[in-house]
Length: 404
Ligand SMILES: C[S@@+](CC[C@H](N)C(=O)[O-])C[C@H]1O[C@@H](n2cnc3c(N)ncnc32)[C@H](O)[C@@H]1O
Image 1 (cartoon, helix red, strand yellow):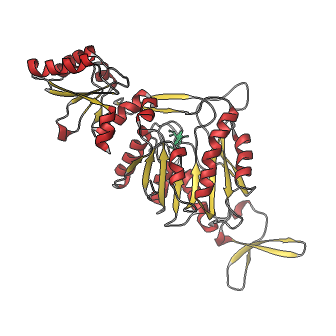
Image 2 (spheres, rainbow, N blue to C red; image 1 turned 90 degrees about the horizontal axis):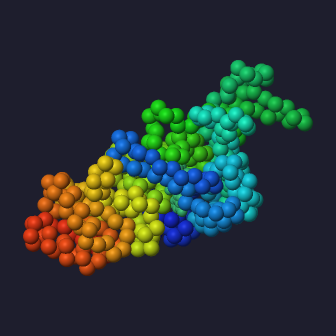
Image 3 (cartoon, rainbow, N blue to C red; image 1 turned 120 degrees about the vertical axis):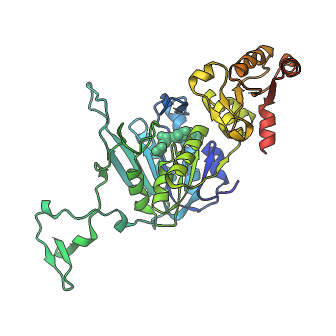
């Protein structure tokens, strides 16, 4: 697998990053699952789809640091010599990640940015935790920084210094240190400090809000991308969630590459890019095999089968309870699909599905599982001969082989 710009890679970044070439990316932004072991599940917008996010890591802080280490090492390898990496974290692991970044980036530390925001919920037994930490490191001492892209207009109203005009008529303020004059031209603007209070977290009524936990605001990503890349550069996000980095990169005319282990997230960001900018984006899948599919959370597996293989639509919860997990595409006649993330599926599953198909007034349907017992095949044959209903039993291996 090579790296193709403007592509989403679905899979564990640990497996995908090693395939990317050395020194090929200008800027990396990484927003990994925080060290908090939370589990999120939510119903997407109209309740039609279940979207989920899970912090992948389980175990103690040192395991988490090891888990991050191999990924950050790969990131550094992929960065160009003048490239930089931003690592977004919170108080649960920032101390450990700072030491890790110092080690991997040979001390080329640039900033610890404190992003302050106001969100709902306020602690009462300690100070409300309302900031994240974003570490910024460069690969070498000679790195890209685009002052003019991130400088803010100089606010002269709060300054005590007088305003001077130079020989060319340009206005400046000055500071004299050890007899030397330092000029600050007003049209050059000024850099924001390393604590950012002017970018709000996504509030519940924000237009860009997709309902995806941990979604970051596009404005935050735009500042980061403008800090260290120019038009045409390549930006990589190895934990790209619902694709905020990809959206911000696209809007700023950068090329991008996104990786996420969650098939739901990948589909979501592909749709986000398609709907917002009418661009079609390819999802490349990394190391997709039986072991990987067995480990997927049930709703992710369901998405993989229904949307990924059949290009169909996942059922809302209610029909799912009635034995239909999704429907095939219009081209296939919108036929029911049942998904079993198990081995040796038996006769009773086929029987129940037969009832569900009849209820849906369909003549054909699919059951997908890792394997089927003899009784299931016999029952599907009987239903076809005697009832005229076509229930196709498909193993995951068959799906993988057909896709290949
Ligand atoms: C904090 S969220 C990123 C949110 C993102 N910045 C946004 O604005 O939407 C972390 C993401 O990392 C993904 N993830 C977790 N483990 C991963 C892994 N091993 N490889 C790739 N992605 C992973 C999760 O699925 C999740 O979408």
